[in-house]
Length: 106
Image (tube, rainbow, N blue to C red):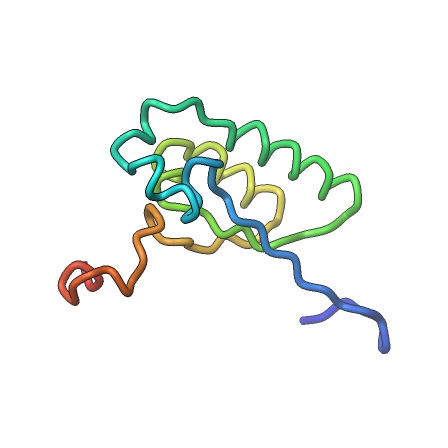
């Protein structure tokens, strides 16, 4: 159900919930097995984004890594409680094209 006025501009905003060391560009430089040993800024960064969105009465879709959700469940709850949509971004950026069928289906 849309609450927009006829002719109003409607935009979609999506946000990837991940930390700097989890982006695909760093996959060869920061192995997955090292993630747990690195300082994580995702919680403070998402809280800042949530504040900015609230100040401007904007909602978004947050694509969250399972790795983040597993370690920061209260962060995921805060996103949902603020009225945003939650979506899966996979568990740890393991590309489907690099997985065997059984691994993908698991």
